[in-house]
Length: 307
Picture 1 (cartoon, rainbow, N blue to C red):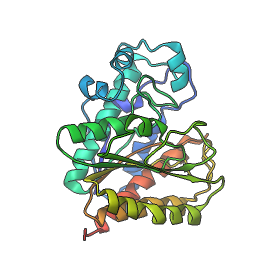
Picture 2 (cartoon, helix red, strand yellow):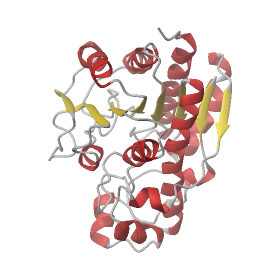
Picture 3 (spheres, rainbow, N blue to C red):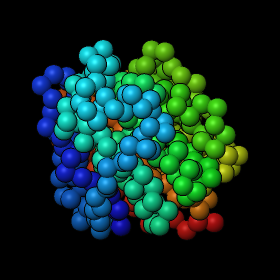
Picture 4 (cartoon, rainbow, N blue to C red):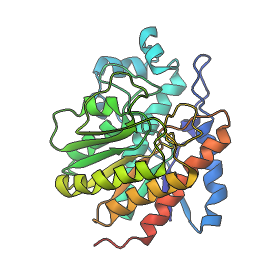
């Protein structure tokens, strides 16, 4: 069974300027609904509430949060984000942030759950960046700990780009651990310092990527012993991704996601995934990768008996 969080506002009308393609999110759900029966996976959809202002302001600058809520983000910040923040976008990012928090709640109950959007790991304290407005990973982790739902949260980021915003927003905290597997020479040019950064060379393929996961993920889990993992499951390490510099195949992505979920769930730790990056001229092909990623993780969760 796949518990997936989705909201109609995830497909906010695209702003007039910017290159980000928002239609991916509708196509992801079309692909999920189409593929789930063939994979023998029952799909259960959950709609999130918008993230409350107080939890966004606990991580982001209140003045910036107000700029987003009022759709009055300055032009220089909009340029860093990559698109204008319209009222539709403001509603969207509140719901995607609520979606990652809800996915975490569902994961605590079912072992695994997925948000069909978000993974906005470039958003910083006073601004968004790199197609990210609010950092749902940092916001959700902070809220889970503040509400007493978890004592320690691991943010495991396998997007092709380093999670610089997440690392910056959680720096110095001993109750949140940031782990990033990313392409060394990709965006952002200036990397932040995660608790553990694994920078991979251009064109690194399935074997090198999976070896890096196997070398580092189990040790982090055993040393940090999180109560929950937020998994940034971007599919942009794929060899055909327009913005990636790595060379994972379809099978490699499948093995990555199954390994991550299995390694976490074998230890009895729940895991919630956020969609993350995936870019290409053929939006349906990108959406299909995301859908298969979520279905693979749900299937692996079904197979696991925690030790």
